[in-house]
Image (cartoon, rainbow, N blue to C red; front, side, top):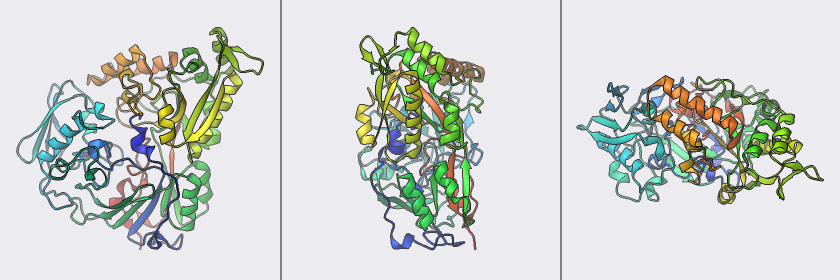
Length: 531
């Protein structure tokens, strides 16, 4: 979730554990033999996307396996050429980006990749007919055109410093995708791309299977078969990994710790921009009061969450920007201060009732807080938040549900949500905070409305002057202290436990989306099976 569509990252958390075929089983811990065999890998992830089409947002941050972008991120999150042969040539005014394309590349159906496919992809994303929840990230784009088969020119409306990072979006084949409904056609579930892997099967709620693309322009992958097992329940994922049904999985810290003595497995820790927050809907008669939001912001004990829930694998969050980022605004940290929380509520007229729960003008300070079923980290964050709030006199009722249950309630009910995107600060703030996006699916879930923040968001994305941008994002972070639309809780490190059967594994700085796009398998096409 950036607050870009959580649906795209987590909505289809369908019930049930994975039932793997017999071919996906092996003796756990056998060196060189994965759950799927020596040249195969089966990994457990928590969520699946709604669609595998880049036209609808899949792979917009890179690492989509089926597709390539013009550019890609390396291990250090620096841009490198992919379908382009070099980084773009940028005009002096920052309004024109020219990409020369790699020659000889084909889609997995054998048809050639050309500049027309790039033009088709970007124009389709921006089409009013396309249901892409993050299309506002390309608001700067005025036009894109092909110059011959191997050159693409993007023209911007204004200098957008992050534009090159947005061109990691996977490129769709015009000859297939143009002839069908962009939102519901077969391309959304049976895509064709230029990437290192080809989709072989998608059993929704169970698994997504890929095979190596033998004609991949970057060289045929050594891992020939890759299966993403969709297992929403953390305990089930850990059990499957322990039994040998999985080669690797993302796990919460308490479950990852259980594999510490297993010499056949290695644990990988990825630093992230992934945060957990509580949405505080402005349309709720309790959370709509700025005083309540300010009180909750200081009543919460973030460090205790890091220590006790994350077991140190993370840090306190005071906004979407992690404290270690160059874009973080120093001085906006909020320390745990229960006495101050109580004073804020007292001063605003929220007085303790006979049972200790505060009341104002006949309204009792109580509201529901939803979290995703089966997600232990969200559950534990929700329970800890409710406990801290109770000490200040606010009664929060925690409830578990699927996104299908939660989404219709988001206008009035609080949600324990997640988000975060590395790279440019525009990525993890615009969709989360822009008032005009309130109620737009999972964008701006709290329907936060702050004119000063709206202006700073526009200022930050419409200039490439670094000092001006820093000032804009400093303004946003300071406004979130005065008027928080969310209570940010923690930034979470991702922990992965993987069989020690391959060489070449590493992690990147990761976004919230820790499924297909992230994890040690971000570069699975470069893994080498151990002998």
